[in-house]
Image (cartoon, rainbow, N blue to C red; front, side, top):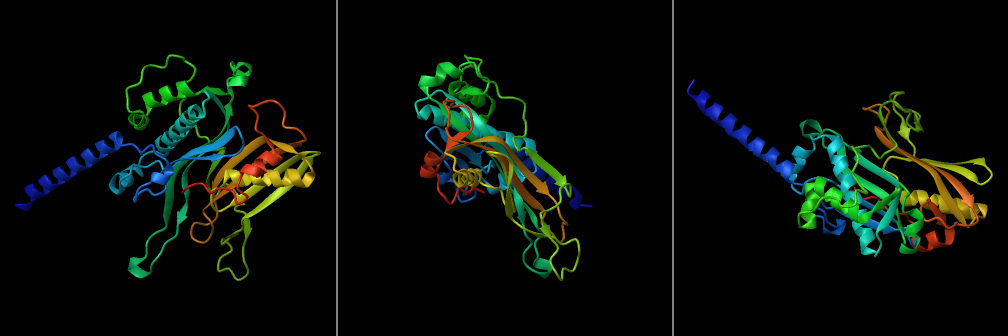
Length: 338
């Protein structure tokens, strides 16, 4: 009986500590920094940029988690929605900041994607020391932007696809404390009214439930269970009409957007065209197969490509010149930070 008061006190103190730690998580935000400055705990945390052509860039933020192992553990139970929204804000903020660094004010988003879980970490060890498999969580987002040059601003001024860099910087700093801290000063209300961050919306085209989409692969000979499916990474090119193709890639890890562009580039060269346009890009994440025997998380990207002989004057459309793209993009593609 004499131990009960002590246990009550210990439980109360533990509760106070947990509440205090949870409070810290709401005040603590991931660092807004280049990915090269990631810490020991979050080596691949930060924003990144990759130039695609003269006006087009891939910009993103990876591993939107607090830079502390204890806080990270608590944040893992926070909603997927809040984590991905934060990653979206960091990526969009960097796009606006980067646009201004190039001496410009306007940009358009060609395509975008976000992610939460990037796969499963398999179980390891044996016996009582065997660990359980668990999701590899790394909230992040990327956008492909095209910067609008000053001499074409008048042509796109009223286009709803165009973002004002100044308006984005002000709006997001008001909403996200991590960005306000990075800005280093209090911000005034948005004077332009040109940009207001919308209610959270997934950028990924499709994120399916368990077993809702068949896993690409086959049951190997001698498999113990017919439920076992050996996942097979592959790609397919289908001609829909003259100059119109669909490219589909499926893999066990997220598919680099640069890899998809390079496949389009290869197709255009093979068919003898000097340019191509991305008419539609669908990015999917699926959970399928048997949880005990087969692949659990896999990814599929599908691009509808239109081939053409000239790029055209528009700076807002996802059109790419073959020679320019091949001179700038690494033929090995670029991997998204995990």
